[in-house]
Amino acid sequence: MFNFKTKGLLNCVATMMLCMLLSSKSALAEKDSNIWVIFDASSSMGVSQTVIADMLKELEQQLQDNSSLTDAAKLISFRDVIIDEKKGSLSQIRTNLAETKLISSTEDVLSALQLIASTPELNEAIVLIFSDGKNDLLENADTAKLMQNLKNRRSEFHAFIPFPAWCNRSLALAVDRDHMVLNPDSSMQKCDTLRFLKGKRYGEKPEERKLATLAFETGGMVWPILNFTMTGIESEIMPKDFVETTATKLADIIEGKGAKSLFATVKYDDEAYLGQTVFFEVTSSYSIEGIGDVTNWQWDYDGDGEVDDVGTFVQTSFSEAGDNYISLIISNSDIPAVSRTLRLHVQVSE
Image 1 (spheres, rainbow, N blue to C red):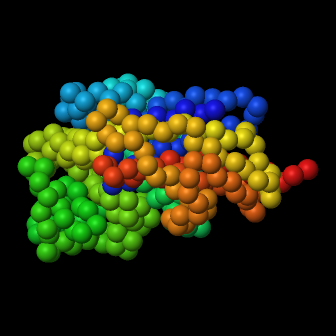
Image 2 (cartoon, rainbow, N blue to C red; image 1 turned 30 degrees about the horizontal axis):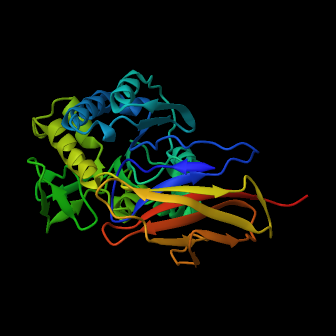
């Protein structure tokens, strides 16, 4: 039996990942990481590294009255492959990032995205991706399924990448999908004259790149990584309170998610084979004090967003081997629905 409690971030639809282990043993799910930091550990990030660490420290301070949002974070450092994974509080993650050794190397975020897409921990989180590279592997690979997987987690991605966007005569601090830009006072303002600088390394419009698209399509923002570099070298064109402004906006985004409030215990078999009937049983559903009981249970077996079944005891079978993602959406009349996504590995029968 798996007891899954949601405690973390809230959006219109909140997501918790339930992982089936392919063994005869049951397991208790750990608390999901609320904040993910994906960090490019190549030497090109040398100046930005300290500024990013300072920003995370400021973010931690601004969220100090809501420690439940900062006590579960995760750092994934990459170059052309994953080089490190750390889990802990935001303070610990920030320290680990600051101490990460940078070396001259090619870098590409594809391996990091593949890792977080395969983990049962990525659910209704804030994902901060810091990368100064072109990420050619990501751009040239067929990533349609990968990107859809990441979007299905209903996490919010923020891409700190080469994105030379200018509003009027100022380098934009951050941009959302509606071309709203972040002001130095942490407010957002529509930019009618947003321009993209076409340099030798990035000839196409940056918003056409996959990381920017992932951020925009998940409700996140794109933050020009150049701002961190310019702040690090104390450029006069950068606002003096850039670190505080960035942290304030991210704190608002994280706090705006709130806390998840619906809970569920789901029981199901440890393994499945092609064509085998798989049973899913919701053995209990409950909520935090003051929130009504769960009254609706809906199932999406193939991740297409359509309801395939309803109830607390359902069954299905699978025609494709590999990882299959099943969503259980529970709701009541008081709060938005909460969706938990189960990952079930289906094997070809011997």
